[in-house]
Length: 339
Image (cartoon, rainbow, N blue to C red; front, side, top):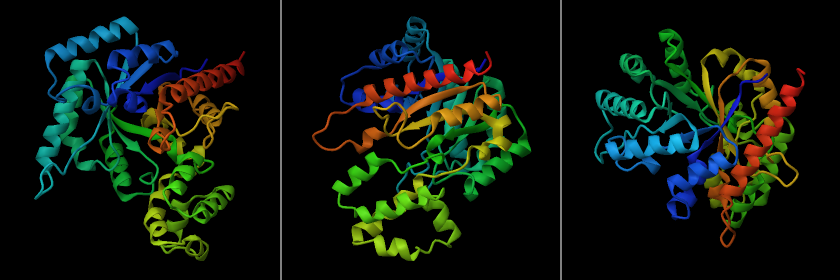
Protein backbone atom coordinates (compact mmCIF):
# COMPACT_ATOMS: atom_id res chain seq x y z
CA UNK A 1 0.00 0.00 0.00
CA UNK A 2 1.13 3.54 -0.77
CA UNK A 3 2.38 5.60 2.15
CA UNK A 4 1.76 8.94 0.42
CA UNK A 5 -0.25 11.28 2.63
CA UNK A 6 -2.24 14.44 1.94
CA UNK A 7 -1.52 17.90 3.31
CA UNK A 8 -2.64 21.49 2.66
CA UNK A 9 -0.39 24.49 2.48
CA UNK A 10 -2.17 27.39 4.15
CA UNK A 11 -0.77 29.53 1.34
CA UNK A 12 -3.73 28.08 -0.56
CA UNK A 13 -6.23 29.90 1.67
CA UNK A 14 -4.41 33.18 2.11
CA UNK A 15 -7.19 35.38 0.73
CA UNK A 16 -9.72 33.77 3.07
CA UNK A 17 -7.38 34.57 5.96
CA UNK A 18 -6.27 38.03 4.82
CA UNK A 19 -9.81 39.27 4.32
CA UNK A 20 -10.96 37.70 7.59
CA UNK A 21 -13.49 35.32 6.08
CA UNK A 22 -11.65 32.52 7.88
CA UNK A 23 -9.48 32.44 10.99
CA UNK A 24 -6.60 30.02 11.47
CA UNK A 25 -8.99 27.86 13.50
CA UNK A 26 -11.57 27.93 10.68
CA UNK A 27 -8.93 26.97 8.14
CA UNK A 28 -7.60 24.06 10.14
CA UNK A 29 -11.09 22.66 10.73
CA UNK A 30 -11.81 23.08 7.01
CA UNK A 31 -8.65 21.17 6.09
CA UNK A 32 -9.61 18.37 8.46
CA UNK A 33 -13.18 18.28 7.17
CA UNK A 34 -11.98 17.86 3.59
CA UNK A 35 -9.93 14.82 4.55
CA UNK A 36 -6.34 16.03 4.49
CA UNK A 37 -4.00 14.52 7.06
CA UNK A 38 -1.49 17.31 7.50
CA UNK A 39 -0.98 21.04 7.54
CA UNK A 40 1.76 23.23 6.06
CA UNK A 41 1.99 26.68 7.59
CA UNK A 42 3.71 29.92 6.63
CA UNK A 43 4.51 31.30 10.10
CA UNK A 44 5.15 34.81 8.74
CA UNK A 45 1.64 34.79 7.31
CA UNK A 46 -0.45 33.43 10.18
CA UNK A 47 1.53 33.53 13.44
CA UNK A 48 1.99 36.95 14.99
CA UNK A 49 5.56 38.14 15.47
CA UNK A 50 7.13 35.06 13.87
CA UNK A 51 9.77 33.77 14.39
CA UNK A 52 9.61 35.27 17.88
CA UNK A 53 6.12 34.01 18.65
CA UNK A 54 4.65 34.26 22.14
CA UNK A 55 4.15 31.23 24.37
CA UNK A 56 0.40 31.87 24.17
CA UNK A 57 0.54 31.52 20.38
CA UNK A 58 2.41 28.23 20.71
CA UNK A 59 -0.17 26.92 23.18
CA UNK A 60 -3.04 27.91 20.89
CA UNK A 61 -1.33 26.15 17.96
CA UNK A 62 -0.88 22.92 19.89
CA UNK A 63 -4.49 23.09 21.08
CA UNK A 64 -5.68 23.37 17.46
CA UNK A 65 -3.54 20.41 16.47
CA UNK A 66 -5.01 18.36 19.31
CA UNK A 67 -8.57 19.35 18.41
CA UNK A 68 -8.26 18.62 14.71
CA UNK A 69 -5.82 15.73 14.78
CA UNK A 70 -3.85 17.32 11.95
CA UNK A 71 -0.14 16.61 11.60
CA UNK A 72 2.09 19.72 11.63
CA UNK A 73 4.14 18.69 8.60
CA UNK A 74 6.26 21.62 7.49
CA UNK A 75 6.90 25.35 7.94
CA UNK A 76 7.60 27.56 4.93
CA UNK A 77 10.53 29.89 5.54
CA UNK A 78 11.64 32.90 3.49
CA UNK A 79 15.18 34.18 3.99
CA UNK A 80 14.68 37.93 3.67
CA UNK A 81 18.18 39.09 2.80
CA UNK A 82 17.00 42.60 1.86
CA UNK A 83 15.77 43.79 5.26
CA UNK A 84 17.95 46.90 4.97
CA UNK A 85 17.87 49.54 2.25
CA UNK A 86 21.61 49.93 1.94
CA UNK A 87 22.92 46.36 2.10
CA UNK A 88 22.13 42.67 2.02
CA UNK A 89 22.35 40.56 5.13
CA UNK A 90 25.72 39.10 5.97
CA UNK A 91 26.22 35.35 6.02
CA UNK A 92 26.19 35.39 9.81
CA UNK A 93 22.92 37.31 9.91
CA UNK A 94 21.34 34.87 7.43
CA UNK A 95 22.33 31.90 9.55
CA UNK A 96 21.10 33.58 12.74
CA UNK A 97 17.69 34.21 11.17
CA UNK A 98 17.40 30.59 10.07
CA UNK A 99 18.43 29.34 13.50
CA UNK A 100 15.47 31.31 14.88
CA UNK A 101 13.22 29.53 12.38
CA UNK A 102 14.57 26.13 13.46
CA UNK A 103 13.89 26.91 17.12
CA UNK A 104 10.40 28.15 16.26
CA UNK A 105 9.64 24.99 14.29
CA UNK A 106 10.66 22.91 17.28
CA UNK A 107 8.32 24.89 19.55
CA UNK A 108 5.50 24.27 17.08
CA UNK A 109 6.21 20.54 16.85
CA UNK A 110 7.24 20.87 13.19
CA UNK A 111 10.16 18.72 12.06
CA UNK A 112 10.70 20.11 8.55
CA UNK A 113 11.39 23.57 7.17
CA UNK A 114 11.02 24.53 3.54
CA UNK A 115 13.69 26.99 2.47
CA UNK A 116 12.47 29.16 -0.37
CA UNK A 117 14.23 28.71 -3.73
CA UNK A 118 17.63 30.36 -4.13
CA UNK A 119 18.59 30.17 -0.44
CA UNK A 120 22.41 29.96 -0.64
CA UNK A 121 24.16 26.67 -0.08
CA UNK A 122 26.55 28.12 2.51
CA UNK A 123 23.87 28.25 5.20
CA UNK A 124 23.76 24.45 5.43
CA UNK A 125 26.96 23.56 7.26
CA UNK A 126 26.54 26.14 10.07
CA UNK A 127 22.85 25.20 10.40
CA UNK A 128 23.46 21.47 10.65
CA UNK A 129 24.34 21.39 14.40
CA UNK A 130 21.08 23.22 15.18
CA UNK A 131 19.09 20.88 12.94
CA UNK A 132 20.53 17.96 14.87
CA UNK A 133 20.00 19.58 18.28
CA UNK A 134 16.34 20.44 17.63
CA UNK A 135 15.54 17.51 15.30
CA UNK A 136 14.38 19.83 12.49
CA UNK A 137 15.30 19.21 8.86
CA UNK A 138 15.73 21.91 6.20
CA UNK A 139 14.86 21.39 2.54
CA UNK A 140 15.25 23.66 -0.46
CA UNK A 141 12.23 24.21 -2.68
CA UNK A 142 12.92 23.18 -6.28
CA UNK A 143 10.55 25.52 -8.09
CA UNK A 144 9.77 26.08 -11.76
CA UNK A 145 12.08 28.69 -13.23
CA UNK A 146 14.58 27.91 -10.45
CA UNK A 147 14.87 24.15 -10.80
CA UNK A 148 17.65 21.69 -11.46
CA UNK A 149 19.43 23.70 -14.17
CA UNK A 150 19.95 26.84 -12.09
CA UNK A 151 23.44 27.40 -10.62
CA UNK A 152 22.11 28.26 -7.16
CA UNK A 153 20.02 25.08 -7.04
CA UNK A 154 22.95 23.00 -8.29
CA UNK A 155 25.22 24.48 -5.62
CA UNK A 156 22.71 23.65 -2.88
CA UNK A 157 22.37 20.07 -4.15
CA UNK A 158 26.14 19.65 -4.32
CA UNK A 159 26.46 20.83 -0.71
CA UNK A 160 23.55 18.64 0.35
CA UNK A 161 25.32 15.63 -1.10
CA UNK A 162 28.64 16.59 0.45
CA UNK A 163 27.19 16.96 3.93
CA UNK A 164 25.10 13.79 3.46
CA UNK A 165 22.78 14.39 6.42
CA UNK A 166 19.23 13.19 7.00
CA UNK A 167 18.51 16.76 8.09
CA UNK A 168 19.05 18.27 4.62
CA UNK A 169 16.89 17.65 1.59
CA UNK A 170 14.58 18.97 -1.11
CA UNK A 171 10.96 20.05 -1.51
CA UNK A 172 9.68 19.57 -5.06
CA UNK A 173 7.12 21.99 -6.48
CA UNK A 174 5.08 20.36 -9.25
CA UNK A 175 5.14 23.54 -11.30
CA UNK A 176 8.11 21.81 -12.95
CA UNK A 177 5.67 19.20 -14.30
CA UNK A 178 3.22 21.37 -16.24
CA UNK A 179 1.87 19.55 -19.27
CA UNK A 180 -0.07 22.59 -20.47
CA UNK A 181 0.25 26.30 -19.77
CA UNK A 182 -2.38 27.24 -17.14
CA UNK A 183 -5.38 28.71 -18.88
CA UNK A 184 -6.33 30.79 -15.82
CA UNK A 185 -2.99 32.58 -16.23
CA UNK A 186 -3.67 33.11 -19.93
CA UNK A 187 -7.14 34.50 -19.27
CA UNK A 188 -5.98 36.82 -16.50
CA UNK A 189 -2.97 38.17 -18.36
CA UNK A 190 -4.88 38.59 -21.61
CA UNK A 191 -7.31 40.85 -19.75
CA UNK A 192 -4.25 42.74 -18.51
CA UNK A 193 -3.17 43.36 -22.08
CA UNK A 194 -0.89 40.49 -23.11
CA UNK A 195 -1.28 39.43 -26.72
CA UNK A 196 -2.99 36.04 -27.26
CA UNK A 197 -0.25 35.30 -29.81
CA UNK A 198 2.28 35.02 -26.94
CA UNK A 199 0.22 32.29 -25.31
CA UNK A 200 -0.44 30.60 -28.64
CA UNK A 201 3.33 30.29 -29.12
CA UNK A 202 3.88 28.97 -25.59
CA UNK A 203 1.08 26.44 -26.10
CA UNK A 204 2.90 25.06 -29.15
CA UNK A 205 5.99 24.47 -27.00
CA UNK A 206 4.04 22.40 -24.49
CA UNK A 207 2.45 20.44 -27.34
CA UNK A 208 6.01 19.55 -28.44
CA UNK A 209 6.91 18.39 -24.93
CA UNK A 210 9.06 21.37 -24.03
CA UNK A 211 8.52 24.80 -22.42
CA UNK A 212 9.66 28.41 -22.70
CA UNK A 213 12.27 28.11 -19.95
CA UNK A 214 14.03 25.25 -21.72
CA UNK A 215 13.79 26.81 -25.18
CA UNK A 216 15.32 30.06 -23.99
CA UNK A 217 18.21 28.30 -22.21
CA UNK A 218 18.89 26.15 -25.26
CA UNK A 219 18.86 29.30 -27.42
CA UNK A 220 21.29 31.24 -25.17
CA UNK A 221 18.35 33.39 -24.04
CA UNK A 222 17.84 34.79 -27.52
CA UNK A 223 14.15 34.86 -28.40
CA UNK A 224 13.27 32.56 -31.31
CA UNK A 225 11.75 34.25 -34.36
CA UNK A 226 8.34 32.74 -33.59
CA UNK A 227 8.36 34.37 -30.17
CA UNK A 228 9.52 37.71 -31.54
CA UNK A 229 6.68 37.57 -34.05
CA UNK A 230 4.21 36.86 -31.24
CA UNK A 231 5.31 39.90 -29.22
CA UNK A 232 3.06 42.77 -30.23
CA UNK A 233 3.79 45.42 -27.61
CA UNK A 234 6.20 46.59 -24.93
CA UNK A 235 3.80 45.07 -22.41
CA UNK A 236 4.28 41.68 -24.09
CA UNK A 237 8.05 42.06 -23.92
CA UNK A 238 7.88 42.82 -20.21
CA UNK A 239 5.55 39.89 -19.53
CA UNK A 240 7.30 37.12 -21.47
CA UNK A 241 10.10 36.59 -18.89
CA UNK A 242 7.43 35.68 -16.33
CA UNK A 243 6.33 32.75 -18.47
CA UNK A 244 9.43 30.65 -17.79
CA UNK A 245 8.00 29.66 -14.38
CA UNK A 246 5.99 26.80 -15.89
CA UNK A 247 8.25 23.91 -16.82
CA UNK A 248 7.68 20.54 -18.47
CA UNK A 249 10.12 18.05 -16.97
CA UNK A 250 9.67 14.29 -17.23
CA UNK A 251 8.90 12.59 -13.92
CA UNK A 252 12.11 10.58 -14.07
CA UNK A 253 14.11 13.74 -13.34
CA UNK A 254 13.24 12.95 -9.71
CA UNK A 255 14.74 9.48 -9.63
CA UNK A 256 18.30 10.40 -8.62
CA UNK A 257 16.99 12.74 -5.93
CA UNK A 258 14.46 10.41 -4.32
CA UNK A 259 16.64 9.73 -1.24
CA UNK A 260 16.70 13.49 -0.55
CA UNK A 261 13.07 14.45 -1.30
CA UNK A 262 11.21 15.23 1.90
CA UNK A 263 8.01 16.87 0.68
CA UNK A 264 6.00 17.89 -2.39
CA UNK A 265 4.02 20.99 -3.24
CA UNK A 266 1.24 19.84 -5.54
CA UNK A 267 0.84 23.12 -7.37
CA UNK A 268 -2.76 23.89 -8.26
CA UNK A 269 -3.91 26.45 -10.80
CA UNK A 270 -7.30 25.07 -11.81
CA UNK A 271 -9.19 21.92 -10.95
CA UNK A 272 -11.56 21.24 -13.81
CA UNK A 273 -15.18 20.13 -13.73
CA UNK A 274 -14.02 16.92 -15.43
CA UNK A 275 -11.84 16.09 -12.40
CA UNK A 276 -8.13 16.55 -13.11
CA UNK A 277 -6.10 19.74 -12.81
CA UNK A 278 -5.92 21.51 -16.17
CA UNK A 279 -2.12 21.74 -16.43
CA UNK A 280 -0.78 18.74 -14.52
CA UNK A 281 -0.99 14.96 -14.47
CA UNK A 282 -1.33 14.32 -10.75
CA UNK A 283 -2.20 10.67 -11.19
CA UNK A 284 0.85 10.06 -13.34
CA UNK A 285 3.11 11.73 -10.80
CA UNK A 286 1.52 9.92 -7.84
CA UNK A 287 1.99 6.63 -9.67
CA UNK A 288 5.65 7.47 -10.24
CA UNK A 289 6.13 8.37 -6.57
CA UNK A 290 4.31 5.24 -5.40
CA UNK A 291 6.43 3.05 -7.67
CA UNK A 292 9.61 4.68 -6.33
CA UNK A 293 8.70 4.24 -2.68
CA UNK A 294 7.95 7.84 -1.69
CA UNK A 295 6.49 7.88 1.84
CA UNK A 296 5.94 11.56 2.56
CA UNK A 297 3.24 14.18 2.18
CA UNK A 298 1.94 15.91 -0.93
CA UNK A 299 0.63 19.37 -0.07
CA UNK A 300 -2.11 21.20 -1.93
CA UNK A 301 -0.75 24.59 -2.95
CA UNK A 302 -3.37 26.67 -4.73
CA UNK A 303 -1.91 29.46 -6.82
CA UNK A 304 -4.90 30.19 -9.02
CA UNK A 305 -6.05 32.70 -6.41
CA UNK A 306 -3.61 35.28 -7.74
CA UNK A 307 -5.22 34.99 -11.18
CA UNK A 308 -8.81 35.65 -10.09
CA UNK A 309 -10.41 38.11 -12.49
CA UNK A 310 -12.07 41.28 -11.15
CA UNK A 311 -15.70 40.64 -10.34
CA UNK A 312 -15.29 36.90 -10.00
CA UNK A 313 -15.51 35.14 -6.63
CA UNK A 314 -12.45 33.78 -4.88
CA UNK A 315 -12.66 29.97 -5.01
CA UNK A 316 -9.79 28.94 -2.75
CA UNK A 317 -11.90 26.60 -0.62
CA UNK A 318 -13.58 24.97 -3.60
CA UNK A 319 -10.32 24.41 -5.45
CA UNK A 320 -8.50 22.99 -2.43
CA UNK A 321 -11.40 20.66 -1.63
CA UNK A 322 -11.53 19.44 -5.24
CA UNK A 323 -7.81 18.76 -5.32
CA UNK A 324 -7.79 16.83 -2.05
CA UNK A 325 -10.67 14.69 -3.28
CA UNK A 326 -8.95 14.05 -6.62
CA UNK A 327 -5.60 13.14 -5.03
CA UNK A 328 -7.27 10.76 -2.59
CA UNK A 329 -9.17 9.11 -5.44
CA UNK A 330 -5.94 8.75 -7.44
CA UNK A 331 -4.18 7.17 -4.46
CA UNK A 332 -7.06 4.76 -3.95
CA UNK A 333 -6.84 3.66 -7.58
CA UNK A 334 -3.03 3.40 -7.49
CA UNK A 335 -3.08 1.34 -4.31
CA UNK A 336 -5.74 -0.89 -5.83
CA UNK A 337 -3.22 -2.06 -8.44
CA UNK A 338 -1.60 -4.19 -5.75
CA UNK A 339 -4.79 -5.89 -4.59
